[in-house]
Image (cartoon, rainbow, N blue to C red):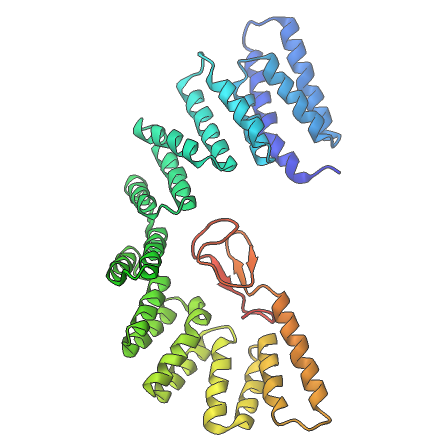
Length: 390
């Protein structure tokens, strides 16, 4: 069955071919040659409109082979092959195109970029890096080449070079790169921390916050290091600051923060913070945490009453599971099976749901990632504040 997505992929090829035939109409060329080319063009369109995309591709490819000057058609076809996953075919087409001596500077640059994209898609990062580095060195389409190099260094986890090229890109374009640079610094901090290089990790986190003062990840990492070093007071304050900077990270730090309050014996501050978060945060996490505090201080009946009231404002399967668990501890033999069933079904629903969703590409995940596994964007995976959310 014809895929609408493939139709849109073929549009650049059709546009390139249309441009070519518009151009040949104003040039003195062989009438027979134009007849062959135009006949092929309209045959390709016919296949496309008759929902035969593979046949259309072959016709447009034959047009490009018949007229070696149809550079735009060849470029569009190469891009199409890459998007369809036929990367080897795209590489061969673009390599053959670059062997020609009659390309203009703009055409050669376009072909080089397409070949670099091919290598990148094929995972040939060293070849792609060399190509885009040459373009930067030659001061050709520098901004776009720098963006590609940043992508390559991300894939290679070469964070120092990713930082260097992101900073160069910011200087060149004026577009802030602080968010991604801060995450690169956090990656370096985590690497240093795992090696026991705590001072280096601390320095990287300070640099991350200089790049992006609102980097909640850097605050969370700094708080975790403070907790490990026994500075619980600083850890608690840093966790609180992270939550206020970016409310979406609250589920990531709440357990550690509650443990910090407990170590300090500061129950009042914990209740004040949770009350503030319940008023500001749209999800269920602070409500559940506060219900545990109420259960400890005022008893489970008070916690059950509070949670039942809050679930009317924050409907949540996780909240329903918690309510059932509280009820089980005081349930009669008649009501126990019902509550057990409710808790089991709620837990199964939670296990099957996506707690996080990428705001850029829509990728769903059960656990949090600082970089979206699908579109590779940073800090776009956010908790879902809905029935099956956090």
